[in-house]
Image (tube, rainbow, N blue to C red; front, top):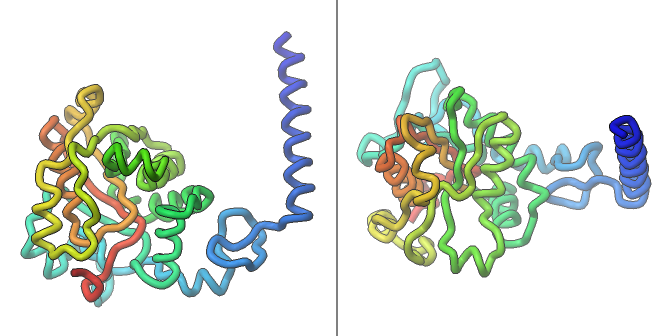
Length: 258
């Protein structure tokens, strides 16, 4: 019986592969951000790759924003992170928000571009590599239930799932809950953003047991002031997390912050 099932699975797999190949003859893979043909699904064409602001080199160890100078392996903080008490340990981001990065983020967030989540997860895993530990638990920043109902999905959960799959880490998509609807952060001052998120995020009661002595890696689509990630990190520490680090798909530059 097992042999028959195996042969049947092989037939189905070959049929599926054939169907995909036939489909690709009619609809070849396209770049994630334009109509150009690419050799592999979920990739950028050379032109868009050059226009996508991947973060590399020296970055702030707390928030991941790019810094001038050479990366010599030492811990360096930006001016904001010298002034602002970040509750998390370390932070990274894959892209600098703007240009193609903005298009990618908005596509995932508002336009059902779920196909972008997997490659974005690979970019996140690469950015977060210095933060990952053997016991890392990956979790997304939560949406309020009303926003989740209207959007139908949490874009940060798509990203965190793809990151965890890429890096081979444990993932808990509902580790955190948003206790109240905080509205949009757009247009608020830095102080307003932090005040708006105060005590707005907590650990899901059924997931609290996962946190004791654990390292948590929080995932968000965009980091601006860091208020949302700060509230999420504090919630994790309140339930006994050993350490909390953060990673965002895109980091908003200082000149673009409110």
